Amino acid sequence: MTTHTTTSTARRAALALALPLIGGLALAGCSGGSAPASAPGTGPSPAASAPAAGTGASVAVPADGALAAAVDTAIAAVPGSALVSVDQEAGGTSWEVVVAEQDGREHEVHTAADGSAVTAGPVADADDPDDLADTAALLRGAGIGHADAASAITGAVAGTVTELGLDEDGGRILWEGDVVDSSGVTHAVRVDAGSGDVVDRSVDDSATGSDD
Image (tube, rainbow, N blue to C red; front, side):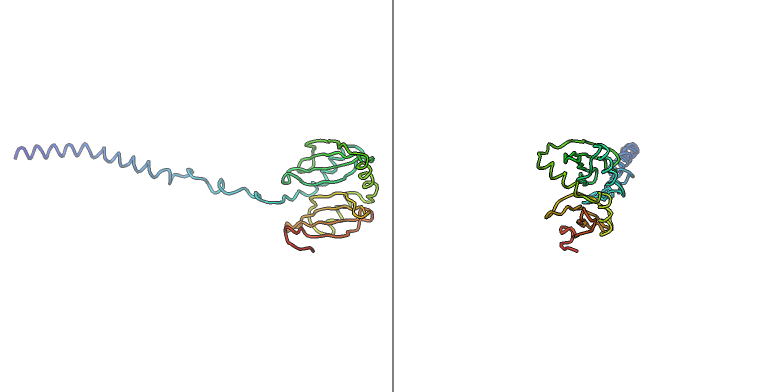
């Protein structure tokens, strides 16, 4: 009887010592296993994991007036020059502008996306005499300037001009431009550089597979 009482007492004492230790281990195990999954801020937030608005867009439409500003900036960098071509590049983050002096010598100028500042150039092209003559003939044959040409293009297709340049086709000097409408569709429009009349326009085949 005495032995049983002593043994029971010893067991109760050992249990009393063990319970706090077991409880502490259990609490530590719960907190270590579940906190990272449930703690706020430990996983990626929707804003962090979602792509930024506008990423993946194939064509960046410039702000109103950016093309005209880019042309003016380039012409100011090469005094006495006139526009030969201007187009967006690098995903809409800059403009490449080619201007030429009256003798046909071309200069390449790059501007910021809003057209307000030169980011590279001007760099003069080493044109041969034939190229100089061809470019000079384009400038002489352009009865309307780039601003009037852009107005004619947007008069034919409402939207934003992203590219504009002088070219010759069958002895006719033309302003050729791309304009993006409100639906994001790109249209190619050609304007007679002498009269200012729109001679043809078409929808970008890669977008729609048809002409308008």
